[in-house]
Amino acid sequence: MKKLIALFLCLCLMAGIVPVMAESAASEISPASSGGSDASQPQEQDPILIYCSKSAIDHLGYDNMALLYNLISDDILPQVVSQLTTAFPTFIETDGGKAIGERIGLIVYTSEFPDSLASTSKSLAYVSGFPLGTESYVCMLGVNALTLFEQDPETGTYTFKESERANLENTVIHEMMHAFLNDYIRAGNTDDKTNNYPGWFSEGIASAVENVYTFRYDQYSKIYGYSRENGESAEVCTDDLLKFYKEYSEVYPVEGGPTHVPDIGTSEADGNRISAYTMGYLATLYLSYLAQADNPTDYSSFSAGEFRTGLNTIFSLLHSGHTLDEVINSIGGGMYENTDDFTAKFVKGENGDGTNGEGESVTAEVSLGFCVSYLNYLGEVTIQLQETDPDATANGSILLPLDTAEKSPIQAQAPEGVKENQQYFNIYRDPNIEEENQPYVYSTVDPAIAYQSGGKTHNIPLNEVPTGEGSSQ
Ligand SMILES: [Zn+2]
Image (tube, rainbow, N blue to C red; front, side, top):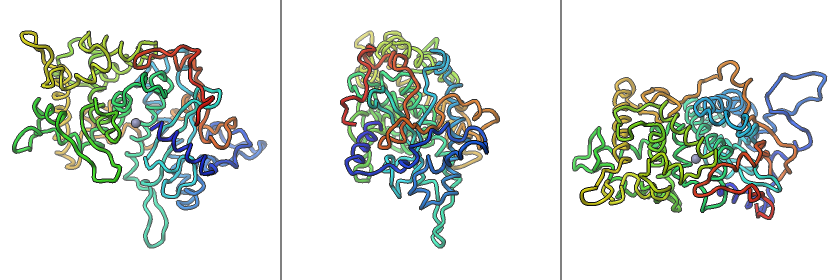
């Protein structure tokens, strides 16, 4: 995602496209909707005109964009920040609470009528960040209105689709998880391919807090009964998962569309990113399970709270300077030598048939047992939910109870105090950033804190912390 955006930025600049918010560069804006108006102050600029693309306002209407902007700034983003800092307290309990940025840039746009830096991304939302100038980091959130409004064919007017609200909420949670990780464990989220966390780890974590099982049910549902002649089955057996994981391949019928080859070892390949989300989710939960389980082969019950605790431990270890290689070796009790060894053994085992070792010492691959039990559990939850709602599926987010019928952990309105007390990722327009790089904002996190974390294989010495100087971005 990051590279794609960086590339797009280059294309934009080359094409001479002027960012939409250039006209608002002169005045300093405090976090947009904080505080009331004061008649003695010069009139504060309208946040809708600052944070929404002009073209989106022209086409979808000011009131619609105001509705969407207010939804994001007043209700969704404050709750997302609150939920993620509550679920993973290590984010704010270390470094005096200075390990997570106070601000984030925002553009609300529609890729149907592009006119801004952000506007060719067709995703519902994205987070982007990179070193800029002499600074180590800038970041922003983009939200695309494309699928969120319905146009009346007769009158041409647009109306917000309430049915898309849960999708918007879950996508913002997923993207903001990336923003937290970009700050908290930045050493594994740079442009250094040799030291970056694998895609299955980054996307697995971001998927673990959204409704991934619902959102990707078309893929997960194929695993049930996969190895059996008659297909239909409510249960995953070891053979189903092994066969699916090793043999399934689907090329989506879209030009340049994604392929799904489930093996997480293939998730870095061009065009095969889906395994980073589907199987990456299972791999991440398995590691979270290992990080807190007394007995890693007991899968008699699963709880979202235990997954959160385990993932919080992993974040904390990485942030304090351990590499992902060390963390995986340590929480696996030596079952996996390092990240690559885990990636190779996940589900398949070293023998490719779900086992490790040879002769007398052959052992079952623990991750295979975990995934079979967990998929069976989510399958059972789905069957139970479908007794009352035939379209329901298990959610998959570890921010919710695993058997919930809720579609999202975000409430319709932020509970009292949540927005007022938001300390991290407040929407901001940075007057210190030149027009061509709007709507990015400089991170408030000290690079010494952001880069003290371990990457995949090594730590980054402070004198090698990246800056944008000399970069073509
Ligand atoms: Zn993602």
